[in-house]
Amino acid sequence: MSLSINNVGLRIGQRQLLSGINFDLACNEVVAVLGPNGAGKSTLFKVLSAEHRHYSGDIELHGRNLRQWKGSDVAKIMSVLPQSSTLAFPFSVSEVVNLGRLPHSSGRIIDRQIVQQAMVQADIAHLAMMLYTSLSGGEKQRVQLARVLAQIWQPNELGDRFLLLDEPTSALDLSHQHQTLKLARNLAKQGVGVLAILHDLNLAAQYADRIILLSQGLCVAQGSVENVITSQQIESLYGIKVTVIPHPEQHYPMVIAC
Image (cartoon, rainbow, N blue to C red; front, top):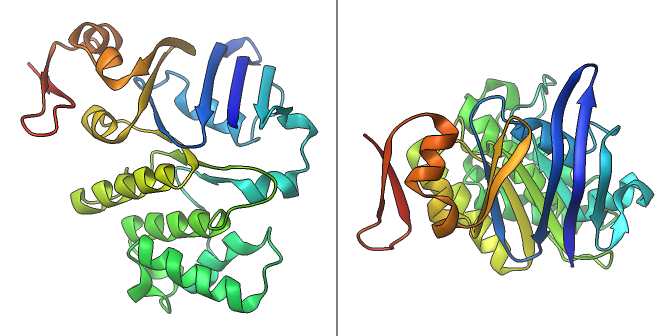
């Protein structure tokens, strides 16, 4: 089962923001979307998360057009972490994470257990009683990560689960960047499809199963990490000379600016 994007395009006014985007996200992989500023990454994310609804082409979730799904059902199997949250209410951290359980009817006891487990996974259990508005930017990002984890924590009879992440490491320190993407890898091993928009090429190369490269609203390359992260592709896309070498221990491609 998969999330399938078929010839998706988006035009707003006179601007063609996306054109002919095609790819599948399987339920056991991490796919990283890369590209320079203005490439269409966040626009694609907003289409997939139903923020932009007037797109052309089709998006299918488990073989069924996404437009035919009830929003409440989609929320039970697909969670979305945007770049930032404007939540300004004086909720505690645990209350914010518990918002992820709203699509479900699993009961207060089970929800409390899931919220606690999600907070542990996101390394925020020690912040549970803190006011969300008092946290740093990185702490808020980890709270929001716990919220979307809680939303898709359990397998669901509606189908396999998906997690969409828009720049999930942008406000994080080095340790939590790797912790977040290791968590994404572990979710994929448990049958969750993860799509992450990233800026760091080396993080993408280390943790993704596949890479999608966008430029000016077009998909210019997609495939395995080794086939996509090449000096020729990166130099063409970003306009900077690079060297790509294998990691000395794990052998994934490493990008070094020249």
